[in-house]
Image (cartoon, rainbow, N blue to C red; front, side, top):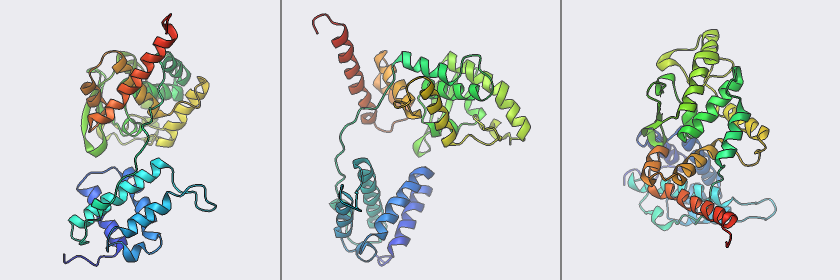
Length: 312
């Protein structure tokens, strides 16, 4: 226990370093955890009391649950759960690393979350979205938008996974993509003929022109999706492209890049795909995460039955 007495801000830095170096946690998650833990550290008396027991964490989380009070709106349930998870993970690390002598994490419970079904599109709505992103004979930026939307749906990728791809990660001949997901886990995902065709035209056409014009570094073939200035396409640009297509398709309030991932999983299960296969394709660490989609398909079945059966 020689390390007890470490200041809270130093302990937080040690925890984030551990997540990055030993756990391989993504930069986005580390950034979110840093914000959550720095908010905890700045709260009243936390810097003084954090190592003495669970009181500082319990007091902080209780304060953050208050909603509707002037000047203290509290946190939404999803944000509160993430913040509680960050604090619990931090305390688990601190106890295991000898920074504190009390297992505070054992005294912290994560707030329960309502089980919300994700928004999905029908197959017809996906087709409308594709056409709105760019027609099959599109060129230039429209072809890039269409290629991204096709890939997100064809392979069920997270938008960060798609934008992190290099040319060497996509096999046009083998019709698959090599994806590095959360926790640096690698998976191979098939990509259908239609998406492969659009991606091939993007790669050989506008992408090749942009790379040549801006002298893009060809390491691993260069980024699969490049912007107008030759740099890897940013997340905000990809989101904007999907939202433009959604607005043009009349789906503006229902679609984000992740909607296509949800639709990919739901349509596979509705088509009879095995749940374990869908888990592998999505890169879920736990089957319980994928099981959410079985509830969704059950809802869809009931809706169809109610609409179509003469005695429903």
